[in-house]
Image 1: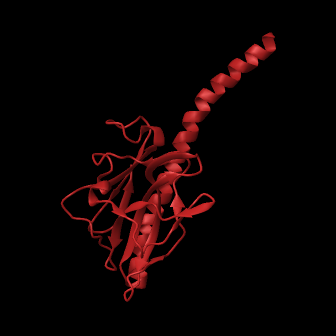
Image 2: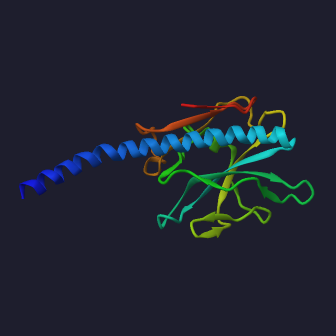
Image 3: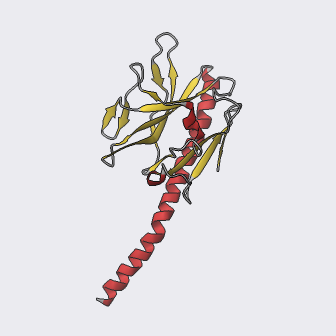
Length: 190
């Protein structure tokens, strides 16, 4: 009995330290990938010499079974000049499990751009084992000269947090913020 009690206490102490570390790793991993993909979008626009859209998607988390819409994924797309159809340039990238963009514009100024609902020319997006056209998105457009369509009079940031803390009025202890320069398209991670 004593051995089982001691082992139970050790497991409890260990899990208490491991879970915050796991969450910090997921935040860092998602922020690093997002920073790299934003930079890639800027470079791809210059290489192809066409405007490239970087879209952040708001949708349910079908993997967890919860119907909680949040900005959970993103993708690079371009528009067909003749038809206006949206052409995906890469697969949709989902943030790590439990990581979303903070819902308040104070912390994620990028949300101030304005959300759009998916239209007929927009692709369906894969969510788990199915696809969906029930999503909304915000987009940043990269121009071939490296600039963006973001207005230059504001600091544009994206803050990643744990899904359970995404609508709080204050930032949690653990978060990652990326700041996008609207003139050069460069991204800094904090």
